[in-house]
Image (cartoon, rainbow, N blue to C red; front, top):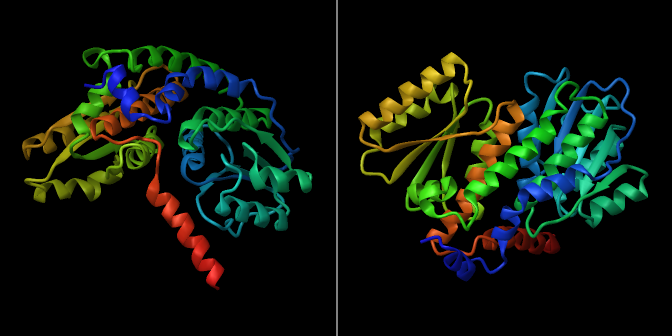
Amino acid sequence: MLSPSDIEKLDRSRLHLIYENWPAHCKKAYQIDVNVPEIPDIEEVVYAGMGGSATTGDILQDWLRSSIEIPFHVVKDYHLPKFADKNTFVIATSCSGNTEEVLSIFSEAMKSECKIATISSGGLLEETSLRNNVTHTKIRFTLLSRASFPYLFYVSSKILATCGLIRGLEDQIPRSIEILDRVSKKISVKVPLKENLSKDIAVKIYDSLPVIYGSSLNRAVAIRFKNVLNENSKMHAIVDVIPELCHNEVVAWEGSKNKPLRALLLRYKGEPTEVETMFEIVRELIRDVGFEVFEVWSLGEDRLSKIVSLLYILDFASFYAAALRGFDPTPTVNIDKVKQGLKSRRSLN
C-alpha cells in the first residue's frame, strides 16, 4: 500500500515528482529576480488571487499578522475593495496568467491608480502588465497551480522583502526552505508507511470526512489542506479555527453519531496557553462522544517554518489519500466544467 510502484500506476502526470522536489523549487524561486514598483506612502496591501494562487496570500497574511504595520488584505473575487487607491499596493497573482478574476482586479487597480506588481508564468497577466508598464515577475508553472506553491510563495515573499514590508523577518525565508528540505526526506514516496507522516495521515482519513481544526497561526494551512483534499483526493473536508469554533462548530459533535468523521488537530510548539488549553478540551470532547482524534505537529522554530512545514506534510498527505482512493490526483474535471459552462453561457449573451 502506497509503495512507489502503487504510486506510479495511478499518478500518470507524475505529480509526486514535483512534491518530492519542492525544496529545490523553493530555492530556485527565491533566487528569481523580482520586479517591484516604488511604493512610498503605501497604506495597505491587497493580495489578489484565486485557488492555488490565493493560498499564498492566506499564508502571507498568517505569517505577517503580528508584525506587518499596515493592513494586509487577501481578495479572492472579481473586484477590489472600495478603499483601494494610489496608496494601495496590489499584488495580482495568477499562476497561469489567465485567471479572469485576477485580470479583473488588475484592470480595476489600474483605474484606481494603485501601485501594482504582478506574478504569473505568462498569459494575459504578463502581456497586459508589460503593455501597461506594470512591474511583472515571471515564475515557473509546475504542472498545476496548487503544485506551484514554491514559486508563488517565495517570489511573493521576496517582493514584500524588497519593498521593505517584512523587515526583521527576512531570515525566516531561507530557514523555512531548510525545514522543507528536512521534511522532504521524511515524507518521500520512497519512505515506507510506518516511517512516513504524510502516508500515515492519509491512511487515517482517506475513507472518512476529515474535520480539520487549526488556530490563528495555521488557519491558512487548514484551509489549504481542505482545498488540496478537494482537488487531489476528490473528497470533502470540514475546516474551522480555534477559538471561534468553540463558539459554534464544537456543538455539532453532539449530534454526529454514526457519521464517518475523523478529527485532525493542527498543532505547533509554542502555542499560546489559551490555544493549547482549547485544543485539549476539544480533543477530550470529541473523544468522549466516540470519535477518533489525530494531531499533526509542525516542525521548525520560527513562525514561517512552522507554517510551511505543516503545509508540505499535509499537501503530500492529500496526494497519498488520492492514491488510496484510486484517483489520479491531477485532473480536476468539475473545475474544467465550470470554466466551460461560464464560457458557453457568456457566448449566448
